[in-house]
Length: 140
Length: 129
Length: 275
Image (cartoon, rainbow over all chains, first blue to last red; front, side):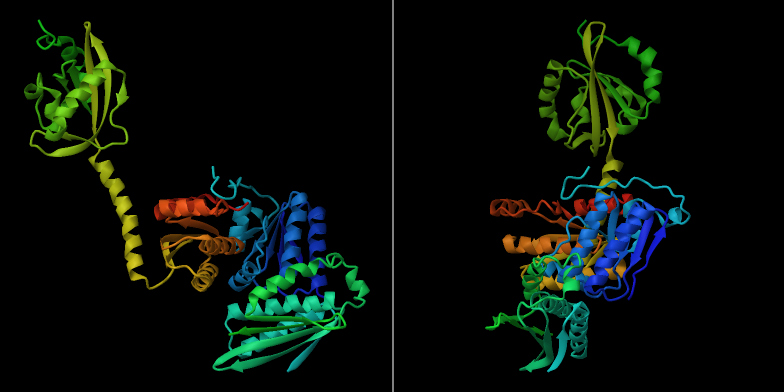
């Protein structure tokens, strides 16, 4: 059975989904991510879905749940690189994955979390406080 | 028509891959291909979760000068689902299938659902290119 | 001697040198509006020499059309004399000896000298400042209009990482879908971080159109970008509120320029708008 690798980069976990996700693999991935978060005390997880050409409601729900569960452990989950076709399909189905952070690529994902790539390569890192605005027009 | 047996979660992947392939062969755009493959994924999962198994028949169709893909999903009715699979987290609630069906409907052009006497479902969908 | 005839010897001797060194116009007038002191910079600003302007009315330094009204304004200032900038938010103009006019900022302050009330006026020529502002504004508007005229590509690049999608005409589901496809594809290819959707050209914004816009914003968000809705006229705002449409989840700005300003802030400061 395939296992999707979960890599550690400083305080961040990186997951890149390259294969077709059947249901139990998706659940296994969720378990692995949550386990690794606890094991490594990760501050954030970047899930790269650039290679996924289909995200159905089940996968979407698993990803959303993963973000929620990680959030309870004070770990942020960022979904990176959702494809345009996948995005439109999810929106058409009425799914919006509320509360899940997203980024257009890894670099911007890291930046949104407050990290920069050269800072976190060697377990020592500095992090600038990203100013997070609230949803809608209530910005500072 | 070609046929894919749907008995477990791996067959869901097979079904959507098959749909995607035939759409590619017929020259569907990326957007349209993704929509139909996702709809198939939802409906195939429904066959396997709700119906205790079934199959999908699919083919390319032509009408006037339109090209489309037609898929027919047949499930055998509420039977004994695969116990091992059902015991996995996320499958334990049948509420799972609630989300998929209405969503799938919005992705395709034609959607027809019938139930038979045995409690099984027959769902026909068509997506034009 | 009347106020008008009293010389201000103290001013000329003690402060004259200091005031002449200042890079702003400094004018002292008495309670009748007569100019009693005129520093060196004022001579440059207005083209009058100190000698020819002393004991003349202040209104000489104003454009003809404002002179009459200014007398009344001056009186009201005398009645409530406290230091302040004049005409904040309005454009004020002064007039040179040769009749040419220029925009100014002016601050007035009352002062008592030997028992009489005088008013100090500090005058700054803001011609350059206004020019700069106008240049910036017109540059932005110009590029906007130029590219809108071209209309060749549906998505406009106005800044690195920011695209503008002008929506024009009726917004039905097919057109929205088409626009979304183009916008999202472009976002993925060019790593666009902010998509500004401008609806200035959209004819009607009803519940259906609002729904399309919300879906577009959701899609942009899912891809990792931020969506800003601009070009919202007062009519649209009214319609939307009356219909009870909830656009509170969207980031909206009245003008494209405002939206661009916000977009740039997002890009440069890494400020995220996601919840």
